[in-house]
Image (cartoon, rainbow, N blue to C red; front, top):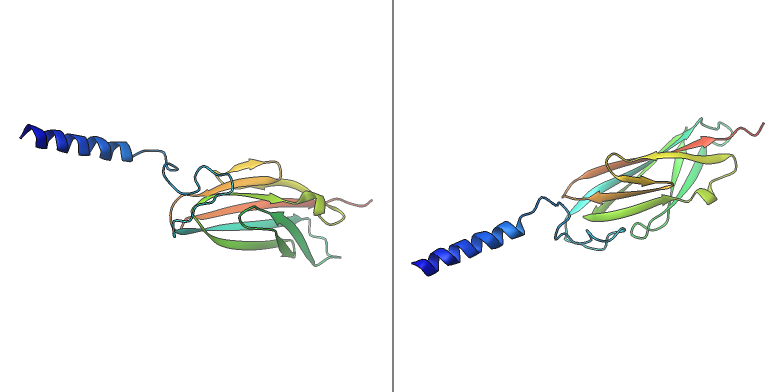
Length: 146
């Protein structure tokens, strides 16, 4: 009888050790800035660009980005706004606007990304649970040539 109680107690201790309030514990890709795990579960990352004020002489503008996991991509804006979406495995993703490649007259202003980390031209987002949606917006401004 004592042996069974000890076994039950050991199972409870192990179960308690497996439960944690740290949402990144034990999840694939949780310790890599650009993610590397693939548990088969996915979420959505939405990257939006706001180009203000809109330059009417250039109706469509492409803003370049890079990410080790998403690859290089561009977001085209029409009338000052554009968006790309990515369905990706859970994990962390670092996304950087390639400011040195912005078209003439444009400069990076700032980025907003909810509770995610924003550092300069980059955001680091974490898809923590299936079907999660993360929205990030990069703001660029037109520099007057006069």
